[in-house]
Image (cartoon, rainbow, N blue to C red; front, side):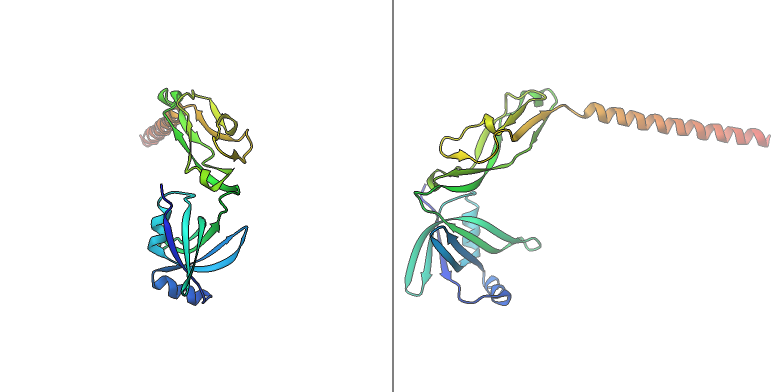
Amino acid sequence: MPRPKLLAKLRTQFGKEASRKLRRKGLVPAICYGPRTDPVPLTLDTKELMKTIHLGENVLIDLMIQNGKKAAQKVVVVRDLQLDPLKDQCIHADLFEVVMDEEISVEVPIVLVGKPEGVKMGGVMEQITREITVECLPADIPQNIEVDVSHLDIGDTIHIGDIGLEKGKILVDSATTLATVVPPTVEKVVVEEEAEEEVAEAEEVEEVAEEAGVEGEKE
């Protein structure tokens, strides 16, 4: 699959007001940096950036930086996005330049695959860890790591040490819990409901008895 391309321009104006003007034009301020790159302030087209991001996490991008008549190309990944929680709009992006022959550390999502045997018997699947840190060459960055949990019974747990990575290494303690199947909680809920009903019935009996006592005194 060919790498997506993203066009950027050098940013020459800074500050909150300059950033607001960029966003009103459909642009987003950004910065590109890396182990061999001094930080470079950029502007990106917001729609093109979001379109690229929707291809998945840790996607390698061919970034073309225009500087007047000159242009420079870098291979980058989106390291961080700042979003406006009210407008659901990207307000800043961090791009990290990668060197194809040097390993980098990235956060990779964990995807659980299969329906556990314990869930079929009424248990509940709980995913404890949703992302792990992986170190590998940029070309080997996985979009996600699939973990088969179909064999888990009630009470079973799967750990980082139970999974493998074809290329690269996992930088997380092998004892870290990925997922577990816990016993069903239905019985507890039923017991609580029954207890509440018993309390309500007892209160009703007391009210009836009090009312009967009051009527007896009147007679």
